[in-house]
Length: 276
Image: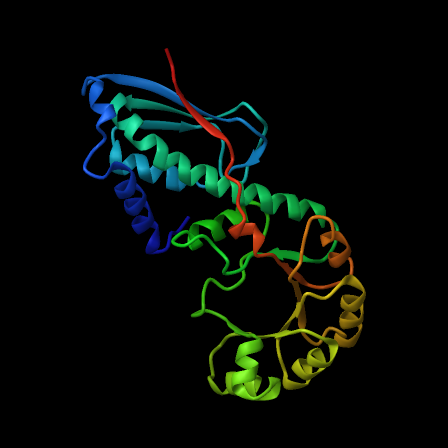
């Protein structure tokens, strides 16, 4: 896969904050000692982050050989073997924590996304992420979202137009905000966030390409789909849970965006062990 410029930066930062001036404890092991280790998942998971794991080892222990038994996007069960590692013991020990931090965090994101995706299976809706990501890990987490079967919303403020409540207030209304967006001449879809059906009608009349329906219950979303008549893509967002997402998807909206996919992440329990 092609990585963004922040990929190498995130690897170097993770290593720097962990190793600092050097791994004191690893120096207890003879420098020439060769060891073998393996990584297992202690719980069911969807794997994501192999490139990040490998990159940490390439920086700290470039001589290490890693044999993967899985690939990103694979679903594994508890106690599954993920990879085997051979190389200098010091390097493996120094790389362990930073490499696992990436793998378990991104696998946690992918696993959570997969649960939501499976819950709405059979509907037309796609699961989208948001900009509510862990600082410095946006590209990584958004990649993990795709490993879990979700799709990416805009990456940042630079590659998409999403007119929200404060933009509307500052611009003097939905029509003005959308008109101003069109004057930019950017080859981007224009999305407008609305809080009620009257605002939906205004956004449609203004020519919005996508309308984000904020915190609307399924009954109101049903009405929104009827009013829309396919004129724009509809995105439901706000207050989405595993308990209500199926009902929301069945209203016929095109997208469901969920901030919790990337901001409320529980890392997968992974373990690295040395072989005797």
